[in-house]
Image (cartoon, rainbow, N blue to C red; front, side, top):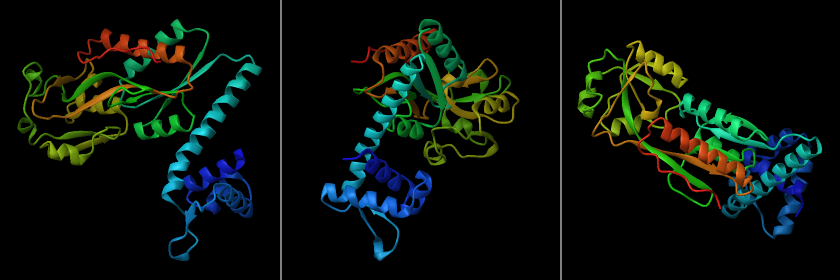
Length: 300
């Protein structure tokens, strides 16, 4: 099975057809078609079908499963190539770490500082993206690890903390005095909202929890959203860890929305570097008093 045939197949699936794949790979359309035919001949069955006899290629169910395997192989090859080049050029070992944009900036800064102090013999590259994009980049070998949403421990994943979503309000807001006792969803009725574009929650989840959305503003970045909240523009529903000294986190007893944050990594990632990241994130969670920190174990 040739590397080029796998590359063409994965590109056709992800780009949606021969024309787009040829353009992306900078080859001719006949070359793409020939590579697909060669791979199908080797596997012994078609990988695509054309609904209604049209030109659009749709992967078969088996082809979609094979795509995951093929993309993983390509990712491992890319990792091996990068490591070889780094060794040839005497570069420091590299760890590409993805980070969800809803991880508090102070946590990212503290962990990065701890890692660069504690592991001077390697280079840390940060990439910010949502959880779906991070998962895709991990699978394709474009990241070694991701600080992201992790629902439960697995062979290549650890939950580091769990936290509730709360109402973030300005210090002078009427709800701020309930920072200890908390409020109910009904107490949020009529409040204007600062909507966070990066929020993991969707409007349907908030409405299902009983929150009517009356948008006062929408912010692409959480830093801006918190500034708007602090200025009294509206309140925001956000993970507790995003609260800063400028806003007040108010528990909402019957909201029932939580998230689990952890680290996921590739099986071929350097184990000692992954262990260093796990330790640094866990230490930061404890340092800021995150009550639902669940601790870590070194990767196998």
